[in-house]
Image (tube, rainbow, N blue to C red; front, side):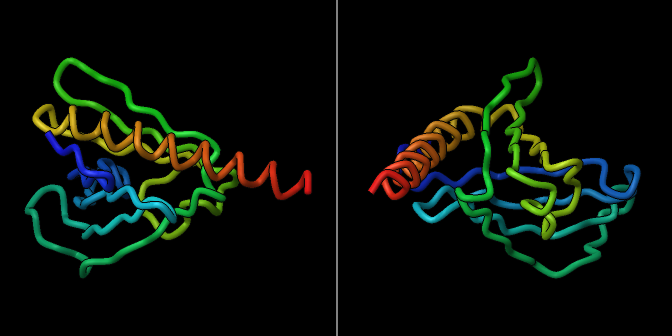
Length: 133
């Protein structure tokens, strides 16, 4: 289990382009936002169709995030403040992005979401403080 202050979790974004592609990558929780490195692959043959790309999702662009535990795997669900929040990432739909997490990484994913929620709360509190001063 990863107990570092900046957890990293292997994630998948399935069903890109009607199931013809899948994105595999790493989600890293940092103080300035969620850092996502990924590559898109053909879901049938496994050929890489993109180079490694990266994107940072700022806490300013996040409305909420949560972890859902399933029987076989888990999901990290990110909800943006607008549809543009995840425009650099494949598979987003209406300001929401679902990241699939393998069973063996569920504990790390739960830890990462907890850490990110703390950072998101701190960001929102700072925003309120700045408005009130």
